[in-house]
Length: 476
Image (cartoon, rainbow, N blue to C red):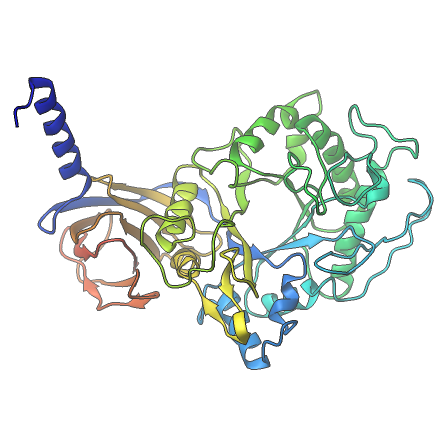
């Protein structure tokens, strides 16, 4: 077969690109880590158990007590499992607990926004209150309570579901009046009930995916409307005496949250000044760049909602539920988007899908490879850690690194290729003769501790990373 000059050039370019994309076993890749160059502080990792998923853990479908303890330890115990430090609660807005609804602390319209509210508290909160107790006893540090919607009677559509706007925000009025202050009081009262019952809510939110009129609890908002309410909520929190930080706005995608930033920063009294954390989800668009704010940012919800439960696949073809896919999502969010927190949608549930990290099918506890990918970060990158400079010489070996309060450095290497790669890791300030602990997750291993490595003179150590694998290296 005869090739034209252009065809030959295209073939050669493709060959060069292929060789460059997949290093061979004899390739030597260099990684440099510099603890002196530091970036964002890490708040932690976690998930939610909203919409009665907490009850799945406590035996709603028959999970025995011994397995209830197992899943709690896997999620929240640092020594035994992932050591998640952030739990995202759903603040209920429904007047029923049927199906998966989250019940409201004010299920009945009191008669108007200025009427005396009739709050109720069951010390259960769709299973979320006892879950928070158990999580705190195992090391939880942050409890983020977030409302998917205000109660229906506070909204323009008079409905808990299907969107609608909070009565009183810009361009949205109701015949019943302005409910912004009543909604702020409602949220603060929820936090107060927890506080009085011995559990501390640390962060408070009032929106979830405000671009999406879902058929379940949902409420619409743009940035300007969110800003209207933030100013009211901030004053209410300040007067309450509770130590609450305010989050916003849990947009359905990272781009959607960026689109809300202008409204949050506008006006003579910018609402952004009252926020502690800016929050977004990854569904419509992933966190691959920093949001335009100097506030901390969290990725507070994302999951594979497309397929059947695939617990044992770290890598097959790059599918949306695979472990390596999520290891990449987390690394990119921390490294490129500068996030301080990363949360999956559900921690554990009885389901046949990938919407949770751990499945409780048939009364068993089945961690997915996604769970172990999260654990590679959450177990070794603790709250208060700082992301530090880490650079790889090859695009197919990605790297991130973090320095903890205790001086321990956790460096994650992800081999995206099909072959082993040999790596020289150079660490500024690393002494020779120190032990480096490698932990690997891939199709064959779940956070398996490998043989220790001894650092050489000049602050370096040599490693071989298997194909389609994630290895975390711990050293001081």
